[in-house]
Image 1 (cartoon, rainbow, N blue to C red):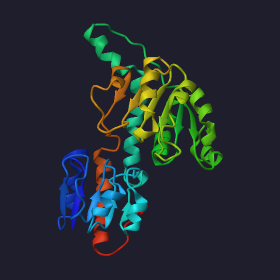
Image 2: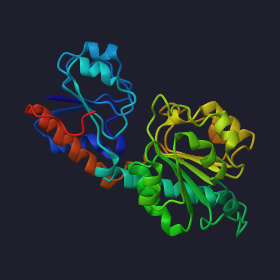
Image 3: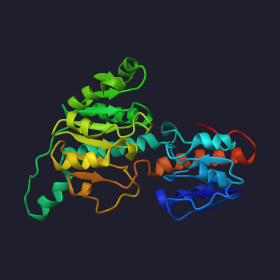
Image 4: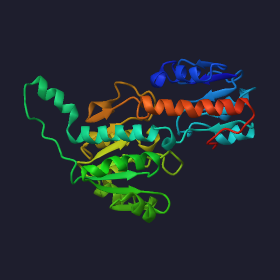
Amino acid sequence: MKIMFAAPENAWGGFLSLLQAEIPEHQCEATGEFRVASLKDVDVLIPTMCRITSDMLAQSRRLRLIQQCGSGLEGVDIKAARLKSIRVANVPTDISGNADSVAELGIYFIIGLSRHVRRLEISLQQCRMGEPQGRALNGQTIGIIGLGGIGRALIKRLHPFGVRLLGLKQHHPEKARSELGLDWVGGPDDLKTLLENSDHVVLCLPVTTESENMINAEAFGMMKKNAFLINLSRGGLVNRDALKNALADGQIAGAGLDVFWEEPPEPDDPVFHYNVMATPHIGGSTDVSMKGIVRVVAENIRRISSGRLPLYLQ
């Protein structure tokens, strides 16, 4: 079977070469960029960050499986795929090591922003020792929106820091508060409460019609002026223009971004001129998580090639 990886060949730490080593009997090819020109002769598509539309799927002749190398499938027209009997599957964050890796990046952002990491190099260059003074995590309030695999992994790592933990969960918030040892958990209608009380607001939820652009100008207006926004999930959760304005006007103190409004973002985007720590969508790109993801993707390719149902169908 022909497996198409919609990304540069060496993206995410050589994911494609790891996959090819697992399934040498199949042909793996990279598109070389984050787009797909044609699906005509493809049996399995790994879409990565590409948008897969109904028009693109209409061209496919042999496509049997769309297998994401992670959890996000918001760019795939799943309904159109089902109409063509194309299976769609992902790799849940909590079974591959992905959630743990993303949570570690979240800790990096929280500490880095609290310690003013972008100003540290300036102090060294100017021979100014002991500056800038950072903010200790102990006693800070961390608000986590989305208490799935990544949110839970982050909470586990934050407890020892002595922080106050708030959360938002779509269903059964009181049960989540008890299970996870949080100080407060609200439902979707309680976003204002979380934003007003958090020193760090961390996004750990998928993009849906309800959550798209949920962090907009109104939301930034609810946040503390010394608060930080951290996005570990999807760029579509945050309105780019509202973020730029909030940074420029001092409505928030800064941001930590691993995902963006477009990927890759323009390197000279004015957003990056402000107090922003940015990483190129590498939250789940570690040795441990890549091995876990490759294992699941390879297993699903074997399953589809032998006529069995893939795991984690959507």
